[in-house]
Figure (cartoon, helix red, strand yellow):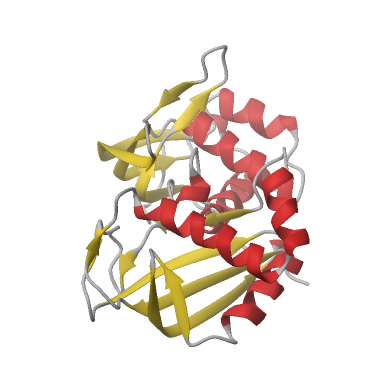
Length: 267
């Protein structure tokens, strides 16, 4: 059974309305509502778990667009994605979603247009080795700096970003050794350019989050290059397209898309 099950849900809005909070928070609420209806044992597992949450979501976007929206317009089509890292819950959700023709979301019944299901495991993650790549941050992303204050860092720092991905990968796919984290700290990945801005979003009443959106270019410099760590980095960044990266990923933050930058000779 695959480790990862990703659902992309497309629906037609039954009415026009503004989201009172960030739309990813509504997707998160939808998850808990559906799981509770499907299987109370699964619901308890999600609510009571003190470990890393076994799912991630995207915010709501218009179909064929990669930009979160803050409102729904009657008759227009929208999409969001849900990824589960517990295959049993993923299969149960698939059974539920394929049995309905309307989806209750954001306080109303909406016509369900299409459901896409994608499976992924470690073997199907990219084995390509990227020496230079661009990460597009679709929804606001931030990292936490481990300290007594757990300070938020809204910057694409490679040490924090790939430590975050390694932690998720270790939890759901395969253990990443401490040697990789030491390589990160030694400058194994560097930022070669970026075009970012910060955004503030409301995740629930009284709870705001600030993250960055835009793009950042990353390079694996020659002086710290390691072939195995380079391969692992490529797998982690592809995994991040399923898991999101950084904080708030279960509320649709940290959604990323990656592309290789092809150059002749990287220094």
